[in-house]
Image 1 (cartoon, rainbow, N blue to C red):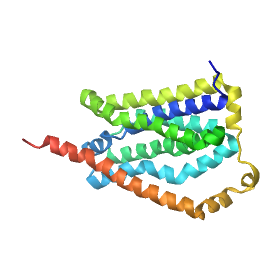
Image 2 (image 1 turned 120 degrees about the vertical axis):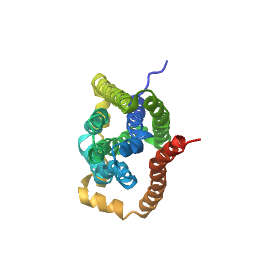
Image 3 (image 1 turned 60 degrees about the vertical axis):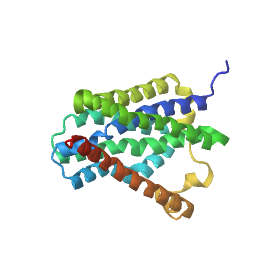
Length: 254
């Protein structure tokens, strides 16, 4: 049997970690977040604000996380984000008010904000001519975790309430962290190729703000970003309102 290359092993690892991490993150919000917020006394408007709190870190630090990974390597950023994935579900269980829930969502948002762009950068670094294919595989694998989470979360809520859901989230997030630590320790030589990967040529000489400006003025990127933002706007609104709507229908007298 042909031995897998270092690049392939890294891509498989990141895909598995991504699936577990996204599962942990998604089960923490879908479908229970809106219901949890309402039971804590939040208004519908406040529930929407609570849901949006996790996206703020993505706006603030996704670019910074990517830049730091270029400078210091992928490993440290991914491990830090996985620590957030594994620890945030523990804090949900201490929440007793809407503003506390919003604060936890803000903290939890740092996980995906840092992990996703760095994970995709690491995959691209090892992919060569197969970048598009490998990124698509990574996306599909993480979608498995995203698809399973609402079903498992809903069933767990029916069986044991919020605590059961967040225990499952802790297990999934911690599993992703332990898998990454095990692989990085076991395959340190292989991973050094990834964590030392830097942009070649002129891009490496650009300052943080010059690189940011070049991205902000790149029209194809702005167009793709606008399309993505529109998609997420619609999806986010549906994801937050639908559980409340469904719960209201179920609770109506026959």
